[in-house]
Image (tube, rainbow over all chains, first blue to last red; front, side, top):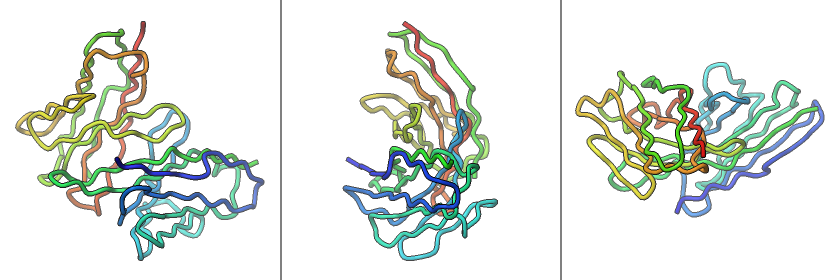
Length: 118
Length: 111
């Protein structure tokens, strides 16, 4: 199997606080993890690519100082939303890439984190 | 990154076979085609992946023509629980393995 655990599943916070979201690959090592953001009734939007031991690569328009990504080990990546504001309220989803022999890498997704900033 | 185009929505009835087609005219030689299913407030779930011809697993089949400019996900005998959004992704040939999600197809299965 390929299980990706994302925690917390839901968080409600006050404006100005920081929120950390964890993404763990439970039964495989992931050199690359991805962070997405999804607004209601819209598709997933890639925010950044997280590589173990190096700095994350952010997509155009995504503030790296706002969304801090750390990928300290082969099984854990974290996304910290700093000084969160109501417009940061969204559904955040991580994925981890698993290499399978005979096919290209497949992304396995966490269950997502619903962030609500008051 | 190859852009994908899918129908926005499809309706079906329980027990029917559903075919969802995705266009990806700019697919690169090294790109694979991967399909995901997403339920509301959940992360996408891997369904199937292919490179060319036909791939079948326990839940679906994927048909890819020789020119690879499109692909068709086939769901046999759908049930109400198959109501979800289905995404086709093309990628991993370049750009560090990242893929871009298109708009997806919302499948509604009716009783």
